[in-house]
Every structure is written in C-alpha cells, then in structure tokens.
Amino acid sequence: MKVPRKSASFRQDDESARLAARLVGCVPSATIEMETLCRLAGVKVSRAIPTAAVECLRRPRLLINPDFAAKYCQRDQHLFLLVMHELWHIILAHTRLYPRVTPAHNVAFDAIINAGLARQYYGTPEFRGFFEALNPEDKFPSMLLRPPVGWPQNPVYPDGGPAGTRQILERLYPRGNVRNASMPFYEEILQLLRQYAEENGWVWVEGEPVLLGDHSNPDAEAAVFADPLLSDTMRRVASRMPSQLGGHKPGRGGTANDQTTEVTVTPEHTRRAFSNVLRRCLGPRMGGERRRQRTPVPSPGGTSVLPNPRDRLSPARRRLGMPATIWVQPSTVKARVPEVPRKANVYLDVSGSMAQVLPHLLGLILPYVAAGQADIFQFSTVVEPLPLARLQSGRLRTTGGTDINCVMRHVLEQKPQVPKVLLLTDGAVGALASELFERVRDQNLRIYVVLPAEAAWEDDLRPIATYMTILPPLWGVQHPLGL
Image 1 (cartoon, rainbow, N blue to C red):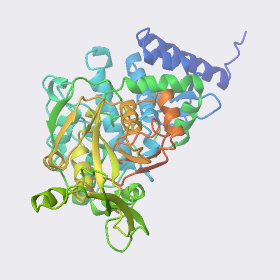
Image 2: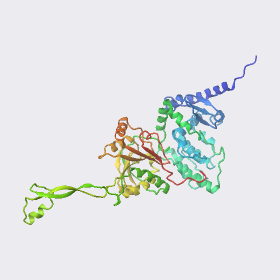
Image 3: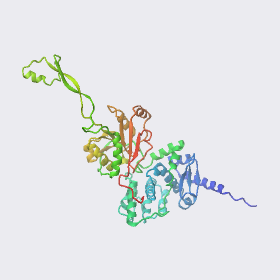
Image 4: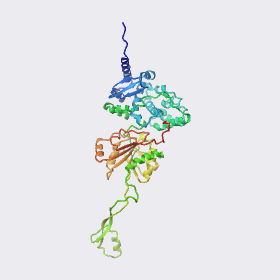
C-alpha cells in the first residue's frame, strides 16, 4: 500500500510548527520576549527571505528561512537570537533613520544589534557562538558583526580594518562586558566604512558580510505597531533594551550629579537646519528698524500737594529751602521705543542616552545663547537652567534618566505663559501624562521637536509635537557613493 506524499503546504505548515515549538521551548517563561512571540499571530517558514522578516498583513507574522535556521540555528537559543534581531530592527526603526538605506547602513545597524544581543545574553553559554559562526573575526567589515575571540573576559581584538576599528570594537564589545560602556553611534561606524572604501575601493558583495533580518521593508514597523496587541508589548520590549542602543529607553534616573563634556563644533549644514527651526521660536530681533507705534512709558506729570515718595526732586528742594508741600506727580506718555526681543525657550535633554551627541549639541546652541536669543534649560528627570558660563565649559547636571512630564510641568508653570518651546532630544522621553496632555492642548502650546540623526525616536513626542525635524548627521555629510 502506497503512503501518500505530504503536500508542499502541509510540509510547510509542519516546518512552521516545529520552528514555533523551538522558539517557545528556548525562551524562559514569564519573560517579555515570550509574551512578544506568543502574541505574534504565528511563525511561518519562507525561502523567499534570506534569514527572517515580519510579514505585513492585517495580523503580522514572523517569517523564517528554514534553510538558514537549519544551517546556523541548530541550537534553539540561536533561533531565538535570530528572531530577536529582527524584532530589534523594528523597534529601532532602522528603515526610517536615513532617507536612503545603503548596505553600509545595514552593516552599521547589524553591528549595533549583534553587540547588544551578545552583551545582553553573554552569561548563558547556550546563546554563544551564533554571531561567531556567521562572520570571520579577521576580515573587515565582518569583524564588526561578531564578538572578538575570547570575549568577554580575554578578548583578542583584531588588527585589521582602517584606523579606529579597534576603538569601535572595544566599545561594541568591552572587556569584561562592563555595563556602563557606551556603544558607538551608527554614524561612527559609517565613517569607518567610508574610510575603508576610500582606502581600499571596497565594493559591496551580496552575502559578505552575513547580515540578519529584513533591512528593506519600511512597512514592517507600521504593521507591528498598528496592531493593538503587539504595540504595547513591543514598547515594553524597547524599555528593556540596553540604553546604549540609540537611546530609546526612558528611565527614572537617580540623584542629580554634575558631569563635564566637551563642546564641539558641528557642520554648517546641521547648523543651518537647526537655525531654521529655532527661528520659528524666536520673537522680533533687537534693532532700530522695527519699533512699536505708540507705547506708554513712565514720565513726570504736573505738580500738586499730594505726597509722592517717587518724586526724586523732593530731597533737592528741601536742601535748597524750597517749599516741601509741592510734589511732582507720576504720569505716562506714549512714545516710540525699541521692541523688546523674545528669547527662544530651549529644553536640552542631558540624559544618559544623549552622552555621545551632547558635545555636538552644546556647540550647536552656544552661539544663540551667547547672542541672547535663547534661554537653555537642561532636563533629565528634573529641569534646571543652563547658564551661559556652564554651557561654555560643558558643565551639565543630570540624573541619567529621562521624563517628559517634568519638562511640560516646568513649561506650563512659566509666568507669563510661554507660547512655544523647542525640545532638543533623542525623543526617548516616555509618555506624557493625560492631565498634562490636556493642559498643553488647552494652552495651545506649540512644541518644536529637534532630533539628532544619530539617535532619533519619534513615537513618544509625535502626539504633542507641533513640528518635528531630524537634523543632518552631526559628524558630517553623507559619502557621495552612499556609504
């Protein structure tokens, strides 16, 4: 008797079920990651994608290439790392960070995510070996996508690559995996790739190095966050990610402490972009060409016997022996006077996730503060003024966390009322309390949000932003070849 062969769709469903079972089995129970995977509508095998992706349907599904999983994910924990890599791509909004994403951008994205996952799960032996099997340790740029040999306790950092490669690797994979070591920014890795291309004529070859996840689907993020069941879970996953990954992690912080950072000059095109936004927040400029038509000003009036303690001529009359019963009375006259210029109220995020862009942002705002065109307030989980002297010397005060609610309370309590403010932040500031949101709307407060290209998280501030812009790169212009 012949046994009927399984149809292709049946075999595919069987493969999908096995992959889903492996994922469920390798993730510790009662974790956010388990909840995320369970809330996904399902896991489906697909050979149309290189590694993994999210299928953009009414209910998103996770797609996994079974051949890649069979070759590189023989351990269930390695399959989990592949899935989390794809989810982190979505959480970090990599398809929206740059107008045109190139292979060099994808290398930078994967370098940050691979390092973040390796550093988060380094203590469990079952998770090790996945990234090492994908890319060699002695070839550039593959070495950026995996831990060095012997990491974390005895890493041997390779000598290949352009100048600065070792420093980037030491920040991606610090010796001993110290928790306070900050990651490099995408732009720093891109600069390294541009330098290598200029020195060696590097041309991108498909499959070298091996990249994970889907880098070309801008609809995946929208599909996941549009699902009400997945959206809340993904945001909680984001809150547990390492704070060095682009800064998308608001936190409570601790006590306020002083810290000092350098002040760095930013490129001209970045200064122009910031100036265009700041001009929207500025009032009239100081100058004689624009004057108010008729403004009441204090002036001496007539005289009478009514005492006037503000009569500055009274002591002189007494000394001269003149009658002290006559007093000059106060009055007002209308005169043309120079307009009093408004200042822009700028709130600068000084939380821990901003540490690497702050030197450039301080240099960006310094000229406007020195010219008297802006008042700066620094905020983390508290708000404090940032006087010119402290700004010039780079002396900041921060708790390390981030909270948008303290900023909005400070703005709303200003007397007289502030009509508009500028927020200079990476955008990872948490959600605004509903009570404050109502007050912002009732006061018709205009909020201008400026985000650095190196760390731009738009979701938290989009509901209250009147205008939102992402600055050009703080480190320089993009390579003409798109690298």
